[in-house]
Length: 171
Image (cartoon, rainbow, N blue to C red; front, side, top):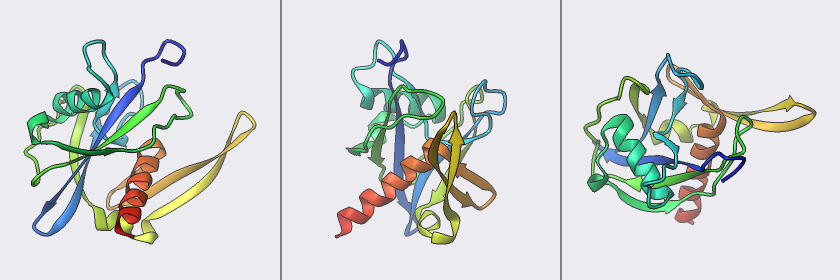
């Protein structure tokens, strides 16, 4: 726990639909206090009843998009990361599904559920990094310019980690 904030976890769920590999992302609700309308993975802070951070990611996905734990096959964990706005760690949990899930966005947290073709994320023309300065520190910010949306920040860094893990597993 960092400065009284419990760690968080996000679920990076993927599947194949009609021969196309897809990744589940959400658009956060427009009335949220932070990260309003941003593209994100389902996820959130660990709660006292969560067994571990994998349990956190699964619980949050069920709460946010009605993705049932029984449909998930957890295949790995990506390196934990922190953000500029919070030093608390975020653990990305990769999970495979047998096919495109039947999801339902929880309107209090999620505006829309997105099924992003992974091939779109591999396209080098949609990816970029920018060097930003904050309080005298320079940092790389990752972006994916998707059809109709910009994926950036921690979620984009996690997507990049996921793509790199897939590439490494193929070699």
